[in-house]
Image (cartoon, rainbow, N blue to C red; front, side, top):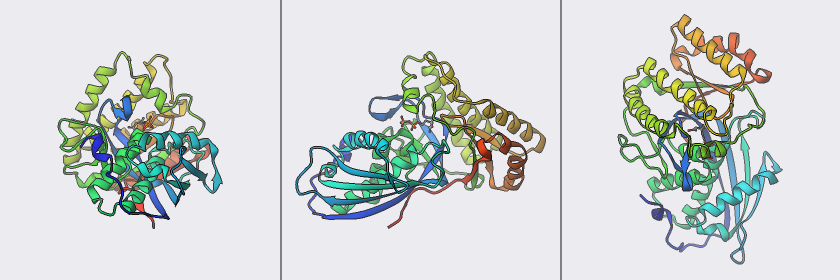
Amino acid sequence: MTEKDFIPSPYHITVAGGKVTYKSPSNIALVKYWGKKENQIPANPSISFTLDACATTTTISFIKLSSVANEFQFDLYFEGKPKEDFNPKIRTFFKRIVPYMPFLTAYHFTIETSNSFPHSSGIASSASGMSALALCLMEIEKQLNPKIETDYYYKKASFLARLGSGSASRSIEGDIVQWGEHEKTKGSSDLYGIKYPYHVHDIFKKYHDTILLVDKGEKQVSSTVGHNLMHGHPFAGQRFAQAHENLTKLQSVLANGDLDAFIKIVESEALTLHAMMMTSQPYFILMKPQTLEIINRIWAFRKKSGTHVCFTLDAGANVHVLYPEIEKDEVHQFIKNELVTYCQNGQYIHDRIGFGAKKMI
Ligand code: DP6
């Protein structure tokens, strides 16, 4: 599919107004997206586990305007209160997607959004937030064109979410989602995420992710700025090639359930992501001393216990602790005994692999 396939033909149905709600999860990348081209095209393919507990719920109420507006008409409420700070982000998003969603200038939208996780937790909400918004808009488009088929509906939702935030393209459908063209993955695309299309071993069907909230402060460098620093980065070419290779290796691991091999790929990806940050110009460090303490504790515990607990990181100091269901009790005890002390205000979130966004009404 190409971008053109997402431009709708004129709508023939008139809808005066309505209300739609979606709950969309966050996701955690195993092979990381870091670096992008024009129009939110990723520099390399990435793959993630969809989460369950960390999610955003968004409701859009829409009313047809008497005439087409020059400016987008919307009000935004975050956790029940007007949130002006989000307006520029939404406006930019609408501007980017209006060629694919021409009805955006024909309605007034009231957007009410809230997160399941504390908003001061430092957890990135762009993946769950943008995917929930994209799905609500898709639901409105479906009212204007009821003939839209399910496959197209989800592909376009992911396509739109990607234009809001790259990782959001992986928060629509499925427990494991891949985004970005990869030679060895049929149906993979730079334009949208797809449900991982190959066999997955049972051990990965109930994987856990405990998110340790190490630092809840504002990040010094946003993801968008970080992505841009991959342009002209001395190791960019090798890094992008490595992501392709890691994805290929991960395909066998996901099929055969080899957890030792899984750990090697996932931890290396996390550290490579941060190595790219440390070697860009300007360079920066998002990990905190507690991040490193936690990593060392995980390595020591893994050796001692023979469990398969491992870590990954996103673009921040928080640590995602990954482990299979069968080791849950042992790992929970370890987290309580040894890791909570490194979390800000002792905060952490027990999450697990989830199955994608849900329409609420
Ligand atoms: C480190 O999706 O937040 O979490 O496309 O600029 O919105 P934008 O970036 P974003 O980047 C996420 C980067 C990451 C890795 C990943 O999720 O793959």
